Length: 220
Image (cartoon, rainbow, N blue to C red; front, side):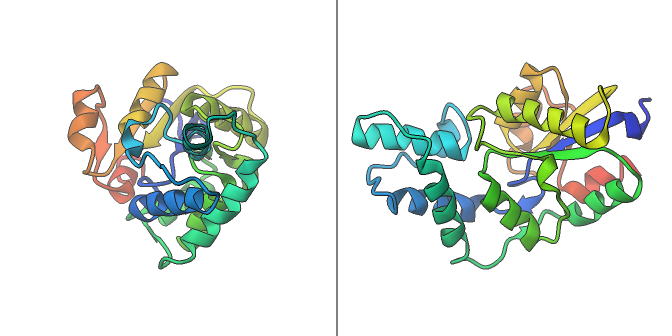
């Protein structure tokens, strides 16, 4: 068995650590509307990339029939935070805050990889009292694809923990896209939540748990 301190755990955020998916999808839609995008494809589950940056570019180019400019990302990010604050604070997925704290207390390496943009991601973690460091947070600000920001998270963790390599890397997520990304990158995968559990298992996931607390019992 690989020692825990030689294993890197890469956490998705929405639906994995924070119970924020429905609220956040509404916020994404309203934030795009505030930028003048009227015809929005809200079938987010069928997007090529499940990321904020891709959602904005895809819908912007559909509406305005011209190339997307990256300088719109900052306005979109700020609009997202504004929309999120219209809702009650999000709650953690059961056991998330305590597991992250246990990882810190036991010097177990971890990082975050999310399709959200940085400010919304940090707000969700803060509302759930989940510890984070910006240096360990990889987002869709720099990569539209999940593979891109998961690899960014890995590089961030290497620098943060001063480790040139990890013996084992475990990706933890709630969506089918999280599993497919882990498979594409040859990473171990842990599924969280009951909503997509059946689809995850059908697609090859062998470790699925109802929440983070249940998963944590397999570690500690």
